[in-house]
Length: 288
Image (tube, rainbow, N blue to C red; front, side, top):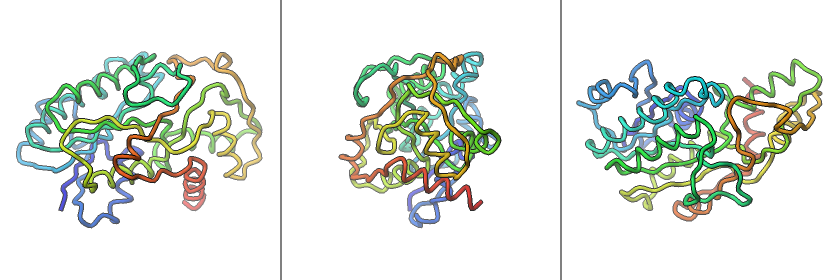
C-alpha cells in the first residue's frame, strides 16, 4: 500500500486525481488544501508532518492567476516558491518522494520547435518566474523528486479556458480569440492518470528528474476555441485576432509546445490527442 498526499487538492488536477482514486486500490490517498495546511507557513508545515508519513506527495498547489500575479508578485512567490521550498525540505527529511507540477511559462515562448527539459529557461512574467523559482527550490533541496511541466491545463473543475469559452459562447454571437499563440491543451485528467501510473512504475528511481507532459498535437488558442464551440453545439462564431489586439498585463508565450519524448520513453505512457480529450470533457460537462 502506497500512502499518497495530494496538496492543493481542490484545484483542477487534485480534483481529477480524486476522481481516479477508486481505480487504484493499492494507493491510500490523503487530500488536503489550504484550509487544512498553509504551505507558505514553514512552522505549520513542520507541525503537520511531525506525526505523519507519506510515500509520495503530489504538489498540485499553485498560484495560477497569470495577470494578477503582475500586481500580486509577493503572493505568487509565496505560493509558487516559498511553499514549494518549505515542502521540499520537510519531505526530504521524511523520505517522501515529491511530484511537483510546473508550467510551460518558465520558457520565453520564442522557440521554433518543441521545448525539451534541458532547453534554457527565461520566464517573461511574474507567474513564470515564480514557477521557475519553485522548480529551482526542489532541485536544490535534498528531496527525491520529479518536476512535471505542463501547458494549457483544463478540466471540468475550477476556472479554465474551456469553461470560459463555453460560458461566453452561450451568451454571445461572436468571440474574438488570439490566433498567433500556439501550444497544446492538456486535460488535467490525462495528467492525473500519468502521475498515478508513474508512481506505480518500476522505472521510477530515487533521483531528481524534470519531465514534460501535455496532450498530443499542436493548436492555437483560436483553433482551441473553435473546437470547444464545435463540440458544444453552440452557434457562436469565433474570429481570429492577433496578440496585439488583445493586450494583457502579463506577457504570454507565442510558442509553448512541449517535447514529451522523455516521459513517454521512461514510463511507457500513452498520451491522448488533445481533441479526443476535449470531447470527453465537453461531454462530461453536458451531462452534469
